Image (cartoon, rainbow, N blue to C red; front, top):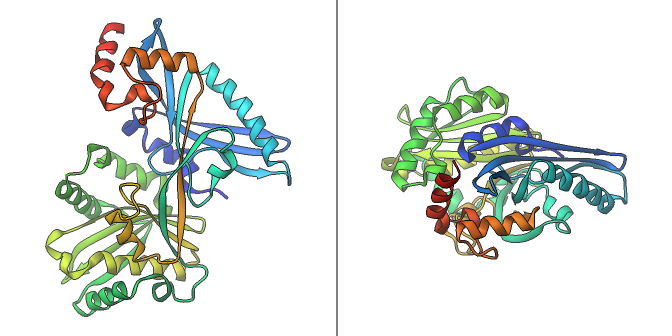
Length: 341
């Protein structure tokens, strides 16, 4: 099964953010087909005057995905893919790869023999397929109480598929980012939202919380096949007492159920800790539904990777990957770039 994260246009949304170019490696073999989408980034260091690259999953999830496979031949298909992609990396001077595997499609399981795969944390979803009333079955008792109170207090929700613009959403989202002091990585500009509408207008579901004719909260979701991904959101702080997020989360679950979706995927927390506050908040809307999120690492050129780490002053086995891009190496990276340009 495909998901939006494996569409090339999705990867193109993040070329500027990752300072690279989206590429797709489609592997076709008599045993089956594998699709691999990634951002290829130039490494800002030169090894013996040669320029190299590394690759990374765009914002969200990805990794190689088996689209079809002859029964009983999955391991062989993975082996054939690995050999072909290894050659691709050699020809394209790709040194290392970092993957955020898809927790729902579970492609980490298929490729764990070829990547260093590590479990990070659980993500949360609201199961729409298996419950007649997902809000009653998946939402906690206190959450349902907050939703009823929000409705009594006058909060209404508007759900729009393929919205004409995202102007109000952008305003709320940027206010939200400023309020929480978010990293610039998450501060998407006007061009990003324009591209979202251009590439995926039909896949966007916008949920707005309205109080006394004012939009006090908004959520941007991606709908692809039978999956809904909660992508970005924003609320006005002065209306938090009205629980707009609770109302909007119920609204997308009810809309998704009515329109044939199987799942609303909310993602995980900001850390890997089981008591992460964001994770625990999301669990209120998915008490029975979790998925395992894994990352993957691969060094495709050991010799050059070691040289890059040495130039950057990084230990090759440090936790951050690739090590030569760690924050502790930034001064060395800048210095090396200046020396090689």
